[in-house]
Length: 271
Image (cartoon, rainbow, N blue to C red; front, side):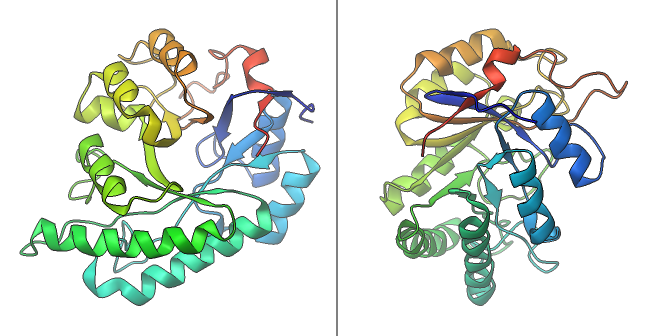
């Protein structure tokens, strides 16, 4: 079971959607806790039994940091920027807010949706800004942060936000302190490179960090990103928050956490 941990400005946590692998939820969360983590993120708890997740988080003394809004078959990458998805956007947002209140999470990645052929980008942007501004005010009542993430267009063709500049422009237009950018080093390596300078330029607007090596969203050390330098830049910056380990476990079944010293896994944020 997870130890109490050490309070810190930056907390490394495990994305239980990917890690430690394809196991029942009890096995996943137990192994994460046994590896020394105090915190997890779960992309879509909407797809699981909330009674079970609540009990397991309590059993293994794990804090839930982040969830995503759920998508729908007709809106497979979310609703934020889709003009005709007003009702579904609010349904899925309120669903996520209720889960956060129940399970203790305070960050929601709001899925932006895909670009619509024939619809001007500016029109979808206006829709996204308006919704996110109203949603941010609603989330602030519960002390919850809303996040916008850039997804690379190789894995996610047509996603509305695919570059850091697009995500930052969106949250700047919203102009709320609890609406921030979710900085995923994997996606930004695929799309942009220049990882450290981009992070430093945007750090004041970043509310959550995720990592995975490229190509293929693999474990750090198996791809092309120099994570020793990248993570030093994050830890040396003014960033306060989580670093989510979001990558596929090694195909050979070896320990997916071996690269991260155990003393860094036991940190927790006081929120």
